[in-house]
Image (cartoon, helix red, strand yellow):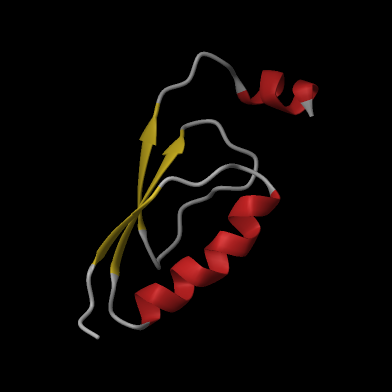
Length: 68
């Protein structure tokens, strides 16, 4: 199959941990992957395997950690 462009909008937490492996594999197969995530997350971090775009959220990292 031809490589394509993928837009990924993950949910922070264990869902992302599973999805991250798939994103890495797709990038290795030639796909261009863009991950859209909030600027404050617990587990979604930039990587060489994808382009990461962030959007602002109305809470801080401290507030997020307190909720968990």
